[in-house]
Image (cartoon, rainbow, N blue to C red; front, side):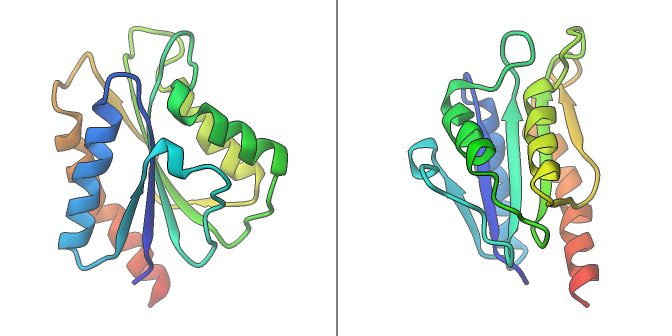
Length: 153
């Protein structure tokens, strides 16, 4: 099974908590899972023989949280070609805003522009409907994990 690299962008800690919860769940599924803190993302280009799982909340008018902005812009400016990279994306937001999950949308678009392939559904978690986003993320994770296992078989 491929190693999973988890990256998060958070304003108040919700996306970080979801990412930490998913890291433990992936380990429980027998995967190696590494959670990157924002200061560890400097120069990080996800290896193409591993998986990338991004969890990102949205701030302002669909903006990226401060803690992930520099990595996003660094990846955008370096523009590494990543045709073998498979990624998953989870967005946290509030559907009462026009820019619902706008930051996660930006991340997904960037990685698709870099040639990476999205693995599974884009999970959008609505703060207006759930107070425990980690519960929805944990319910989504087994199907995402199974998709990679099917591709590896």
